[in-house]
Length: 199
Ligand code: ADP
Image (cartoon, rainbow, N blue to C red; front, top):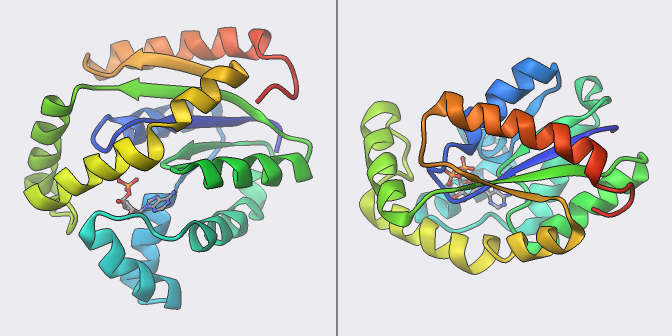
């Protein structure tokens, strides 16, 4: 794993959109733990059966289950040269696990792109997505819970990655293209500015 890029931000921030564009540009896979979990749910796997009610409530699937799933995904050949992480890590424990997984293969987190969007806009976007995609967890109640869980469990990662020097904050309340060009510029800088082993 030579290059790990993490997209991080609240639900509805557009991190998935940016992660998928960047994956296409760089030719490395986008690994979305939300998509992987939804896949388990639709296949009705053992993990999917555990995850389904948790996801529908807006809570987080337990760290050990998500990390095991991620580890299996990283073992696939397409992730050999790097991956773009979307929705993982979501807790401090997951950030530690990711670091340990990367260290096993001599990799590191190159950059953490924090896509920042105000809450009022997030709620609007998620309600629109509910109509377009019909995701089971895009109801008004679940959206509120996901935002609360994000503030409590995931937002603290910003400090962690700021300290390590990997964090780049990007204003996510702009056009997709504009954000994408900021992402590209941030990565140019990150490659040269983050010393090896710092993140
Ligand atoms: P969003 O970022 O829009 O909330 P995701 O597709 O990333 O959507 O995640 C949907 C749900 O899947 C989360 O609310 C959570 O229940 C579960 N999930 C996804 N990634 C993780 C993770 N890294 N750790 C724990 N739960 C996760």
